[in-house]
Length: 173
Image 1 (cartoon, helix red, strand yellow):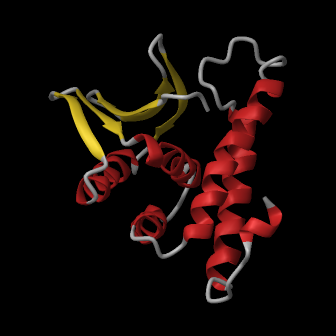
Image 2 (cartoon, rainbow, N blue to C red):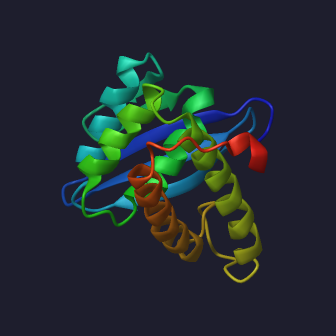
């Protein structure tokens, strides 16, 4: 990630559905990292905004009937990106929202490092994949998102199951 990143989370609503977009950028322009659609998008967005608000980590840019736009505090942007990867095709978003709250409370500092590195890894894999998908508009390609989401969910489940044990991440970095 570059020196000064801006993370923006957007909920766009129309009559039939809603789309949650997570964007990243600097001074020049924003790039869509990923988009989520589906029946849980409004629920996920509202809860992320609520959780981040508790920590003073989100600021509104624009709120209207059709669109809600917020900036996410820079240090939490990669963490939110990681959680949005977890939410992709999730059958139980409440589980991941609960984990997000725990992570922001500082209960799982190791998971913070994992999420940040997971987003960076997914971006690198998508750069390679983009050579095959030249028309792709979002930074994280669908095939990388599908694989990343599935593997991150599996990792998080195992991590939480064994979460009582201390893992020395610094030894692996």
